[in-house]
Length: 370
Image 1 (cartoon, helix red, strand yellow):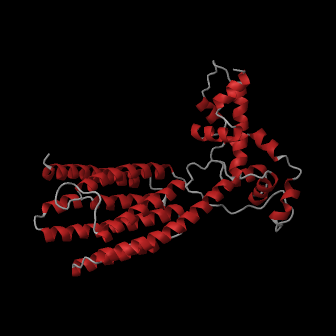
Image 2 (tube, rainbow, N blue to C red; image 1 turned 90 degrees about the horizontal axis):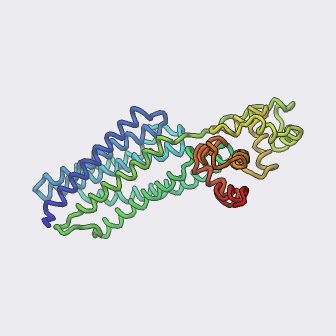
Image 3 (tube, one colour; image 1 turned 60 degrees about the vertical axis):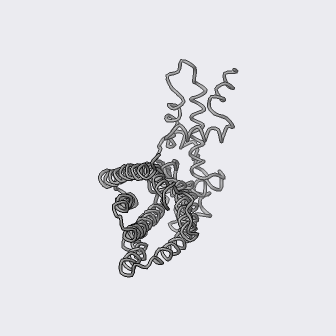
């Protein structure tokens, strides 16, 4: 096979397709899903990233080796501008509305200055300096975000009855993968060795082609996630209509306020758990109390998080539906999940197995004696 022609053609096709996908995805987000700041930031990052794939076309057009190297390194430095965009995206995702775009744009300043310095001096040592800065910034960002995402998840469990579209564990995995890629780039550069070459003179075309397909996969994955992603921001606690003390200590007085109220009965009677977007604040309002009293009641008296507490009602309702189920029943397992308040069958199945030690099908066999 003539690798001299095959790999450049394959790379150009892969790069062109990836560029088109990135542009379409970015414009789609800006047009249809731009309610949140992190969605707008990611859309801009996609458009910036699409320009970077033009590198694969541009470098191949220069016959002069020195010019090709200069353009190649210049566009690699531009890729780090996109890395800065990813950093801004992750921060706006984990901390919605906390930082202005102008403050977050400081992530990009070192990269813009590095490009300007390289254009003026043509000194290739700018590249390792940028890599060192990126690794240092990524390390700090990784630790900071891991801690923040874990804290955010605990807040979700105590405040939200359905966490799937609020959960940010996928973002934590994404940050780790981005860090691994940065680490690989740094090790490869400093070792002056590439482990993904093809049988042409010092060419990384095969790896660049592979990177196009990797980019397509993770962009589609992130796109799907951030279109579905919801942001939870804690609402200010309301005063309890049941409390006669305006400044009562919620840690001490929740029992006096809720002691004579059958919370479980009220929730079952009104079927509040069927609301898939139920939050602690909403339930507190429905029950005529405040969020802090209700939270203390659930955490201390029930020894559960709000998420576990509400899902127990849903699972209880699901069991009642399963008790009435028969082969001629018009309801499927997916219908039972929906009717009992779950937003998805996968969540229902996971929670059912966790609580009862087996799937609904196993429970049905048990009650039917088969």
